[in-house]
Structure formats: structure tokens, C-alpha cells
Length: 142
Image 1 (cartoon, rainbow, N blue to C red):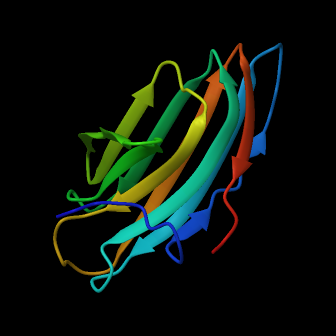
Image 2: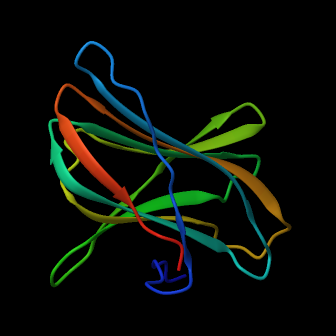
């Protein structure tokens, strides 16, 4: 299955909560979403205008063992992609990507699955943490 982020008409805006304490940058976004049998992908976009010395965590939790998250960084000529690592936590599955030094750029998160199963609920967490600096712009709804 080809996984990509749609440029027009397919991405939702991520809303970040900022909490800075003791010189530590903390930006977090939480989304409770659904994947439907007729559409096995949900896209989210955001842009880091500046990023220095911050960690990025991208995680999806669900009862569906096939649910994954892919982080795509848009490039001038080529996009770079990162896949999540899946772990089983009892009757919940968690798929996580961790990037030690998150760079500035335009990003897309694709929550997807490869099968046409039933409707599935998921929780998406995005966290940006560190002692550095970040300037983030969430993409507007298209």
C-alpha cells in the first residue's frame, strides 16, 4: 500500500499546547480519531519554522494491531520517511517514532493501516521536548 500525505483536501490541523518550565520546551498535541473501512488513512500536518536541540515523539495507540503512523518530512526534491515501531501493551497496541534531533521543515503524519477492517478508534500523541528552541506552525485545514 502506498502511503502519502495529500497536499490538498486530506490533512487535518494539529493543535499544540505549549508548556515551558525551567527552560525546557514542551509542545504537545493530542488527537482522538477514527479510521474507517472506506478510508484507511488520516493525515495531519505541521511546520517547524525553527528547531534547535529538541526531541520529537509521534505515537498512535489503538486496539487495532495493524494501525501504524508514518512521519514524512517534505523535501525540496525528495521526502524522507520514518516508520513506527509497534509494541503490544495488553489489549492495546502502540506504534511510536522517536527522533532525537527534530529538524526544521514541513512534516506530515499519516495514521494508516493496510487492511480494510472495521472502524477503529485511535489516540495520536505528538510531543516536542528539549532545552532548545522551536517555532511551530500547524497547517490550516484544507
